Image: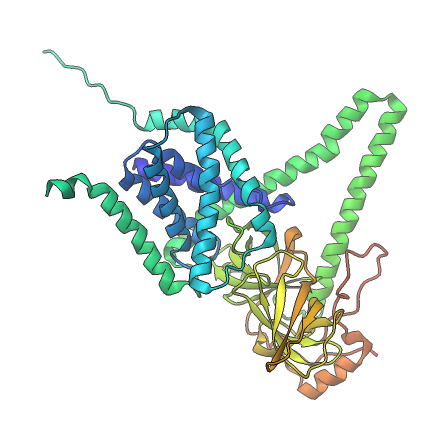
Length: 170
Length: 328
């Protein structure tokens, strides 16, 4: 159920930003809410939950992009596992740390998409503008990560709140 | 057993990575229509997107028409205030005029086939990832949109419907790498096929299967050939920018600049799939020789400012409709 809440949150972000993208000229320059959600979970949850969330979000993003099945799923799950494994070697916390990891993961995610397309089709059909937007997209996601970290943290606390039970005396 | 328990989670995670990878490798070169689950997701998420876009449009309008005026009032005296109001009104009128012009061009396109249930649609979302070039429009199967339906604007070919739900449809753009359209070189009538490259505008599509001996040069206009009954004949597709003719090979290769600005798609028309050309090939040829059969807009056309409308579209007829009346 908690897993579903994170999927819902990530998907709402993707839906929102894909709509905003139609009304701004530089629509490749969008923060990636799916990556942000997955990174947040990868830094604090067990790998199974993270992977399942990434798989679901990847599926939803892939269908919205009319992409071949498995492409976004593989890239996002790979990204989640990468962040999870890397988090063991990283020492840091807080909004800025989260933002930097988000930015790096977004770039890695887009590079993974590029690599998978290249590997399977021989030609990635990668837009020149999208290539140019790789680093700026990472930066925008990083910025959104910094801003939304307190909100995500509060939501996480709410979702994992301990249930205190009092003894009842007769 | 203990070792297996210890590494259970990472192992399952790796397995979950392999599953989509296998799916991807077996489906890498094709896309499919939405299944019932995808349709459910679109049904839930598309209204949110529609609402977001409407909200953004309202905010933009409010900013242009109200907040801006408030700022001006604070900064100027009564006369300046009135002046600013008039200027804002002018801007609004100009916006309305341009919108009217755009819609009139769309209407003009519709008038050529009144019996065809052409649908006007609004773009409500774009592809969440830049690698795939698709947009979501706010009409679906309940309005008559079917899989494979052609999507156009007054500028030319936009793409075709790749997935459809009851109220929304996903359109694969012409510049998507999976998209291809049969075309004619307008000047020499040579047949070819154009394929997207996933790019935005410049060098967005390439020509394939254009015979080596066919005459084509930079500046030539490509129009839809009308074969396959997806895109009507004569819709502008793009302008040739570069022609590459190697020392060997059966075909030459050309790079095309699309006539449609895919970064600024706001309204589109959807033509239902399986429309039919009633008139014979000879009739079409005769119609094409008339000035009225030129493509809807010249390839380099931008939004007209003089109020002069482009010549009408050639024969685009639904099944059972009478043959086109071409005005000399």
